[in-house]
Length: 435
Image (tube, rainbow, N blue to C red):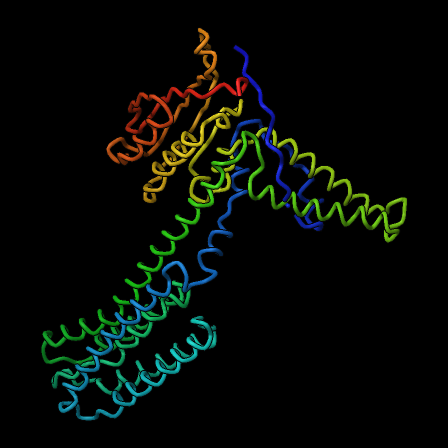
């Protein structure tokens, strides 16, 4: 039976600055229909947009609560270290350097918090440099004040408290900045502990505790913040990808819509310049080149808009699906799926990929060809297979929700090939010719 056809969805306006038109048009050719190519995925990946959306407001999306929690964690460690300083104060022969270190640390912390609050909880580079310089002064003074006094149970306290201050800065600065400062702190405190003369190795244990209190909290804070940001970016990406489910059978994606909008503005500006006489006729070579580039870009978008389905856009415009998912759908059968089937198929792909950060897992989808049907009732349905082949996804790791989503798409048979999962789904949809 021949494949029924439906009218493509109307293109949504949207696209590219005039300066990049010539470069974008040169050498560009439409991809094979229904094929999601790796180079197309790279060109359409929205990594930058997702990262900007996740980090545009560090206080939103739970960032403020995370920052407050880290500040309180660092503060509790600093309070413990200050208590330790007070306890060992009577045994300290010369407490002035360590006392000065604590005063400088307190003043620097209060000043930093005040500036951050006035700066809408953002930390400018100069303030971070100030915190690092004062932290270095605190470490030097405290190490100098406790040097050679392990026999009297006097150990550094203000120096590891600098690590507590760095813990509170994890959400305000890039993780690599905090890790670099923590590494320097660890080297200084560990070096001072190793070169000190000791009557007994047992006096090294409190030094190790102090070093751990200065290094471990900021490192754990960086790990927590990175995991939190990845979770936020993952959820934002999922929300953006799910917006493609409601598209017509054939349509342009979000990025193509933006490009079409910019192309439309450039074309309107050029035509208005000609109509108002601001651009004389015949057109200058540079203006003619711009007009030709506009025409080429518009033709390419019209062609792509008639061959790309919602599934193509969901994969190519996703930071997480793009590198790992390949779609072969030359007949555009994904556009025939009902909304519930679309959502279930997208959820299936997402669940198979999202929990495989430590392995090089891939998913390959092949839709079609249309299977022949017989009978009056059968002719009202279009049946076609969906072949889902994975690599690096063992069956035992598949979430039960994935199987529930697959059942919504259609009856399926799963097999294991080379330790990875393969699922053959028999999909049945309404015949668009009867709509």
